[in-house]
Amino acid sequence: MEVADAIVVGGGPGGSTCAWKLREAGLDVIVLDRATFPRHKLCAGWVTPEVLSDLEVDPRDYPLGLMSFDELHIHWKALTVKLKSPQHSIRRLEFDHFLLCRAGVRVLQHKVSKIQQDNGDHVIDGKYRARFLIGAGGTSCPVYRTYFNGRNPRLSALQTATYEQEFAYRWKDPRCHLWFFDNGLPGYAWYVPKANGYVNVGLGGMADKLKQQGGHIREHWRMFVDKLRRKKLVSYDDYNPTGYSYYLRGDTDVSAGNTYIVGDAAGLATRDMCEGIGPAVKTGLAAADAIITGTEYSLAGLSEFTGRGLASRILERKFVRHAIGVERRVPFR
Ligand SMILES: Cc1cc2nc3c(=O)[nH]c(=O)nc-3n(C[C@H](O)[C@H](O)[C@H](O)COP(=O)(O)OP(=O)(O)OC[C@H]3O[C@@H](n4cnc5c(N)ncnc54)[C@H](O)[C@@H]3O)c2cc1C
Image 1 (cartoon, rainbow, N blue to C red):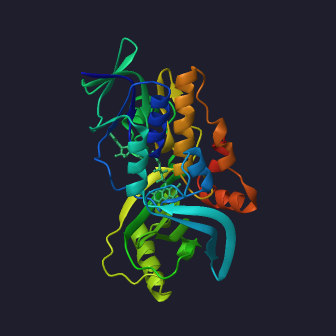
Image 2 (image 1 turned 90 degrees about the vertical axis):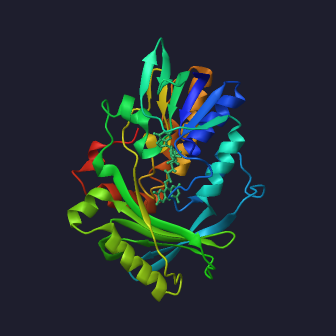
Image 3 (image 1 turned 45 degrees about the horizontal axis):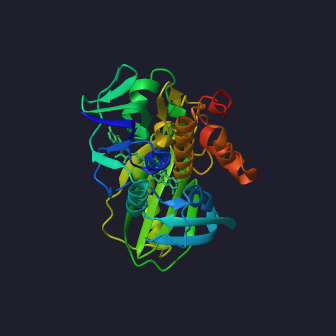
């Protein structure tokens, strides 16, 4: 049996951030991830300066691919606006591996399945034991499934469906483009150029609404890649996109005794732009702080992710309003 003070399930940004801070405070930490890093993670991979600042990463010192943008090019029907919004693009394959190495903890490849309690400790698959357990396993996190799903299930009205691909490509347009609500998509599509000759293209929307419309996200994908070709942004013949689903922020419990969930495991992506890296990092930090100081773990620090400005409020309404009056029933904390 491997024994530690804390076990973190999932080595994405939420898990690695939590592990990093716990290790800095002197705890012995194990990260278990079903994947071997560097691992592929579906994600457009844009992060705000605030995310890098929370991670104490100076973009000038980041040793891997990073591009910086001062503005986003937003398209809505015939309208195009430049939105001042400093962002960076990174490749998740590199970024997540970098953060996990930086955490400086034991990282073991293991798919977590059975979690039990024994004398106040958590025992995982009969092989790993620790007092504190942090669930950072994304949408399918086994810690969420074991301890949180029954108490406070995530709402399907806040579920997103996405489709995307990242590939080596000699892009010519170095700007970041977003297309909102094209062909009735209840969400948006993106073109994000990356350093060292990569591009990420994809789209996402609210899953319930897509289902109600009776179409499939694949049809939106076909129309989107046609548009990219017509606009001479990307002409590519080898598309093989994949899908993933995650949840926008609801009213989920995030701790129970010495068990904590962070990031997508708790369903915390922002309701305006569906960004999840920032909330994963913030909650990774908050959970570590609660363990280190013996205080309550709360989502209070996430409030700045919501309701910023008019554009943010309009998007939030568009994304979560459609189903069962969910905006009234799912308050922010
Ligand atoms: C197509 C798409 C585009 C996106 N674009 C952006 C964006 O541009 N900017 C942004 O901020 N957010 C974006 N997001 C959201 C963002 O990717 C997530 O919110 C973020 O990765 C959450 O981080 P996390 O650490 O909580 O989980 P993850 O990064 O998902 O990490 C979870 C880890 O847990 C591991 N795991 C899962 N199950 C088990 C198990 N049973 N046992 C062991 N390990 C397990 C997985 O292998 C994985 O490594 C996007 C998401 C998608 C799908």
